Length: 133
Image (tube, rainbow, N blue to C red; front, side, top):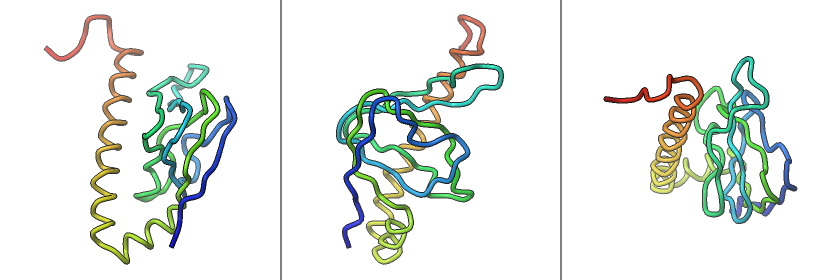
């Protein structure tokens, strides 16, 4: 079962918004994507991290409520392989070793994004010079 679909997005395209339905993910092959977070009283959204070729975009499809935790915008033209969540989850159910390997990799992605978000929010809101002792 082939589940990946080659897709392209023009520069400045909005790939998804924070809170929207998370039903897919992408492996970036070319271009750059900015991850952002909505901060009340701040426009535009706060930049969290910029992703590039070889990186995974989107992990919110793994766990309920299946809503994006961040937003994503193409900084440049983007080429990617898109994977529908339902197809990937079916493959994982049929092949537990594949499922385990994917969940391990996506857990690493979640940890990386959490750390990037934490650092960015500290940059925005922490008093200058504050941080861990």
